[in-house]
Length: 165
Image (cartoon, rainbow, N blue to C red; front, side):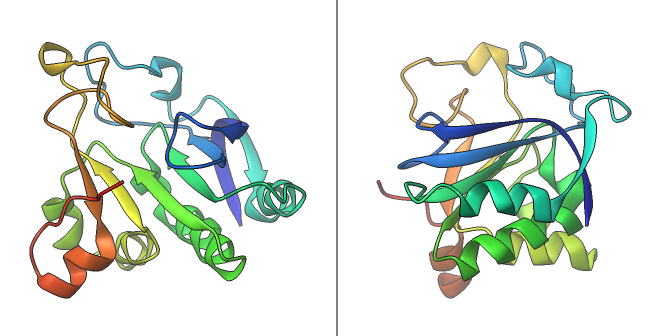
């Protein structure tokens, strides 16, 4: 399945727990002031690749603990991102997804691809980056308004449960 990406980082330790392959999706509607990846905003930039090619990179790295879907905005390409997440789970890897949307917005979406990506996500970092709430000491997030959500426990309890590292 085709996906437009800004790039891939292998062996990342800054985009989630453990060693991760991070896929930076291309295209973002949020345009947060002070965004760490403003080059990912343009929906027509980046390169088009295939999810199978990305998974081939994943399979070549036995050190990976998981994949991270970042951006851009992964939920703007939820179908190919969900496919990557499904394939990662088949390999026993975890999936962490960053989004500028709130969990509640995604959970109430009628879009089946959005639902699929949310279901295939283990850890969700939600909310827009807010420059006034930026804090460099935060783990795996840029601003204090963003939450790190344990999707499995959130689904089980029916209310947002923050992830415990």
